[in-house]
Image (cartoon, rainbow, N blue to C red):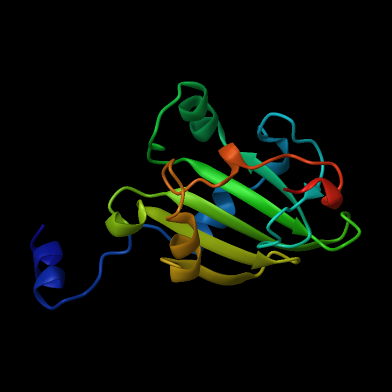
Length: 156
């Protein structure tokens, strides 16, 4: 207890979560649930994460979405895999994990972006991620209202 108070007194930040913890938690994500209508890579109508994407969410997220919760609970994780124009070749992966107290102004989301080999490119309070997702009506989640199309020409 004394050491924690001392650390706070000298202005050191408390680490609430790390990209290494995120990498460990998302192992096996391809076996997680997917939004209704998803199965395999689908065209990304806005192209933000690449021409084709696939989304998964963990059991915590699934339970909250199924219950109609407007805010995701601690431990909710979403993974978005990006693919090249062929819809097969993985190019990057972006994740978001709810960490209570991490970034209150940005919904307490911890972001992680990884290259095709799984190397972390950026993580933490990523302003580009939070800035875009802040437009969401559902706790920084963008996909609930996104159309699922099978061909890019079907994008609105």
